[in-house]
Image (cartoon, rainbow, N blue to C red):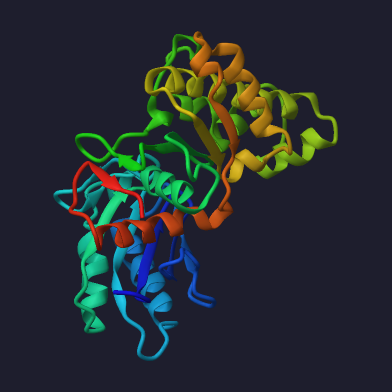
Length: 315
């Protein structure tokens, strides 16, 4: 399989992407493609989007090149046995047979290769531990703060995905400090925008919050700080529970201000109850917006040399 490429597919709350990725974790030039998704996504529209990104990515396959398999990182929860997904932010596609659709697309092109599904947070954690900010650490977590919030763990060089493959759904945790809301409802991009609008701000998106905060708008800045504080407190709890060495924070809303990750780190240090969890380093993800696709490819590259289980070897 040396030199074989992986087809990587990443399904999230605002888009689905696909690309070809080589054994060194590099995206093949010209192979990356995307389609929009969102809360109104239907099974029909998602089927069309999957077909579009997969076919366009595979069109960039060089003559004579081999495809080792397809890896899918999807917003969850995911059902690994059934090959289906139930993204929290896309209720209309719960139960969508994502593995089958990708498999059908591959078979239509006479590509009989395995297709592997994982929760997108776990895929990101694999990518960062393989090629990114958490490489070389003993115990790490990588998270995305964007339309949703989620992450995954790599412990002693192995992905820890849990009993059902859904470990890392940090955004669905709750705290009395948030009046019973989930972290995602409080601290995600849409959650922060909704809070700011309730406070009298008149913008419409996370990008607007960032711009207005940089211009001195106190409500926009407060929304960003509120998000970072909530994420930091949640990460302090995760670090205390799992004994994490490092946590990488990425995603679109994590770029809403230049100091967002530093705000998260300060909140985590202030909240952590024990010395070892206060010592957990919180940094920016190292792979930028390529991380989810590199992680999806890592699923395939890992599966080439280990059997599928809830704990899998990082390439």
